[in-house]
Length: 444
Image (cartoon, helix red, strand yellow):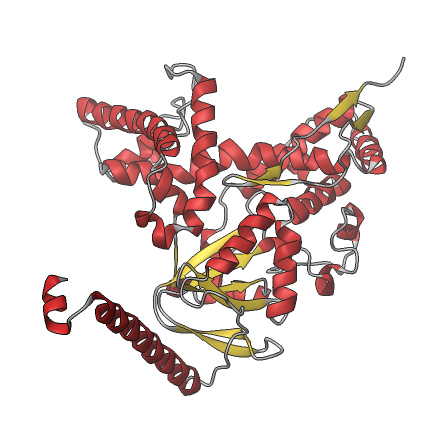
């Protein structure tokens, strides 16, 4: 800085030069982008009119305020309809170009056909480090309540850190959050270290596969992973996708079903009648999957209140997406390396053009229509090669618990004075007011 002052004379002149250089760099980048768009026969994407054209702080503030007002979904719908073509628009996320889309054709192109062009951001891995599915077994010498509270506090900071990620290193450290994720991380590192030590002691053959394991021996994911790698960080990272869905997505998803059914009494009555008609039959996977109205209720709840309602990918190389450009959104768009793709399931699942005028209503009967066969229009568990591997198990668990409940209890009553769903975001979306219901047995 002193050398620059000696060369150019004053700090004000240096400031002017830096600003000029930044503007020139942005102009060159813009020209290169426009040339690439023309060269590939693409059209531009509708853009959000930022008041802050450098970082896009105004949009961040708008979305954050909508979360605080508990109306994030209506705000997003307004953004798509006002500044996009209804399904796609482009904006800045702390200076990073971001394409927001709820177009099933773009989602398919990103998650399937163009899979190799886009990488997972793995936010949870980066900010929570890793965890083990065995962490809460009885032999785990932890206070479960304290550990759950630490995970909860860690997850609450994830969404904010994701949105602030480009400038996160410039912000002061959140000591409370740091303490929480340190507590979480220490436990999972402990179990990884135990697995590695156990492997070394018993000299486990690295060529051994799960098929070589005696049938009487239970399957432990971590034990199988250490046969493939002894990288401590890698092992923690691989366990992340096991723990997060188990900790939040499943219980929240089940709670959401009860939340919605309690507000539509006829649905519980139909579920109960359907379950009682089964008699004393064993509730196997095949039986649960074959109960039609029960499956409709689960699908409809996940459509409206999927706990994980967005998918974020990072463009790893310049590429062309087949749709999203122009006034109608039918033209191809050019996506530069480094662009974020923010796919919004919560908007996709409420598209009135596909789901009908009552798309925002909980109506399980819509799934009885044989003409309703969604593919990329319905993605509660993601899609493509990175879709949730446990989605069938999750739906089966939902079905089993709900069937047991409707068999046992005649009525499910809402006990919440607030009828609408009030959003709260941690790592997943859930009801801020909880699920205030009463289960009543049949009168004798």
